[in-house]
Length: 599
Image (cartoon, rainbow, N blue to C red; front, top):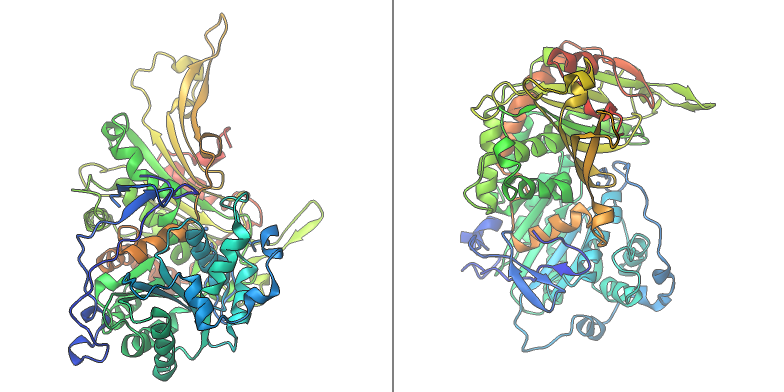
């Protein structure tokens, strides 16, 4: 698949609208009944956005809205080009100015796309969503007639929204070109509407503003719910009844968490489906939009050397590792209600595992891929407490600096047993993976920041060179490492003779280092996922039955941990995590690969 970068993009292909022409039609009470679209429409990816097209087969921000929650996302510094923008840019444009900004032509019948960021004053919107939309606009990936609306409870003018958004926009894609001009054009398309999340009247007022900008064209509308889960349903209800499209499609992007367990997740899905069809709900997991995760299927299904090895016959174990070198840092109130298992393992890591282990899909169509992922999840054993280790970081002094414990966070109860670390052994009971341990671990306040997949192959039977490695056979094990972040790379560890007259072996890496191989900027995951949602491409979003299967694996364990009040193993802030994680791996004759000499 071509990479979305400064020279690669997809053209916007309008999807057919439904026969429901009026937003007030009684037969179209659900959003989905107004804009059912053809799933056979194929999005296109364009080279240089304007030259030629080829057919396409298709990072840890917290959810903080109106001050509801904080985030661990790193603030984005301003780039020089924005400093050159004139103060007049942030004023509200007249209708004439807006029409000029979108190259208005009365004979132009291309559909309009209205993107509404619900919870626009929150950190996720400011630091991820708006910058991602600008990056797509900079690369000519958005449709010709698009408008971005911010919606939140905060009182704010259009100019104030633009001022807020402009502080997070950067020219990271290509600093040499007309970034200041692009910023100006993008900000002219950004507007704001203040309203309550449970007010149909406020959403009806938004609807009037959207119609003014759409100029009588077929209207396609995307709502991004960058808000806490407890107000999802109110916002969807109001958007459905008061602000959905009357003659195009309407889609809603829902941020995780999708419930706390099987029951709450099912209740959330049932409530959403009162107002939405399943094909309108885009449950976003930003890890699925990361370049190396999307490359998993390419690596496996387009390289003959890997597919025959992808089974229990040659793979000894698979490790999925996620670690952060910082604690909750202000997110304690949110995090304590969910914990590391719900926050990272049940969604991010489990989704990667399903993509890694799935059978070859019928095609690269979204539903075919998601069908195979569901089969993997349904083949897995529910997690048992004996195969899980939980931990919580404690205070630690290093280099004269005191690092706080998890419970030192003022938003966290002093007696909290919420895990900030978890390691687990999972098993897939099917013919391909029977008996292969999938080891998963995730934690905060650890020694390093990383997210990677490590595939350890079996030992060579009757290896002639065992004596050269001594008793530690793991030193002779081939290992494939897919580093998702940071510093993206794929490398294969092989045994190699050290040049010289003697017979001395060492482990060498066949290394694909993305920064060295590709000069192009790797897009943020939100850019890819937002573009997919606009185009109706669903393969990187989570289907409801997929979500049910994922929660079925973890819910019994989560309930047992809470009911038995399991005390987590404490580990120092900045360490490698609980010792228990090593005993868990050793039980299956495995050593965690992230402690190897290559790190």
